Image (cartoon, rainbow, N blue to C red; front, side, top):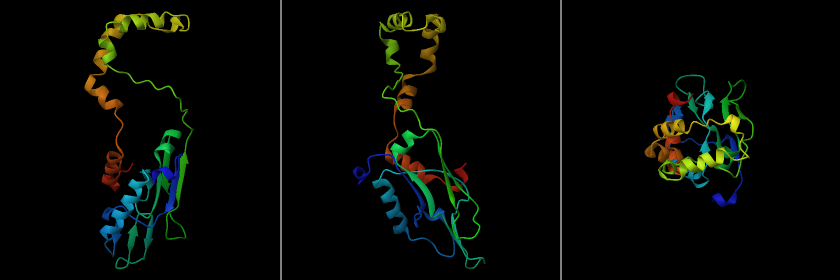
Length: 194
């Protein structure tokens, strides 16, 4: 199903579904199969939820405690492509005035400059016998402004290995799986939302 939409996209609004019991409060308990279906759709389309600020429950019905029902029916979901295109995506649930839904405001800040050149520091480079010679050669070449480059290579040799270990480097360059992201998303509760 993901192949149906290959670019970046954003889904916002009343999706009329919840992800779990913590997204419902009041008179009726939600049916487990309904939110399992919703989780499945989110997973099938590789969507990621945007944390909302403001009200946790985005819909309510009833003024009196005996009939009151609150749910988080409105939300914002994005594709991975959308996350890679925007520097910051945020969602705010505004106070409701006249309707039974809380309006959502989505903020997309500056487009990230997507470059085909990505740099990953690999600690294994430090173990290569020609690494420092190559660094010296490149830093002294004509296309590098040597007046702006620190040329005390002992600083590089002493500092870099102690800053990033192989274990930390492996962790830093690993990309979380869709399952890891979805697990983190589904484990969120109202107390963890900023």
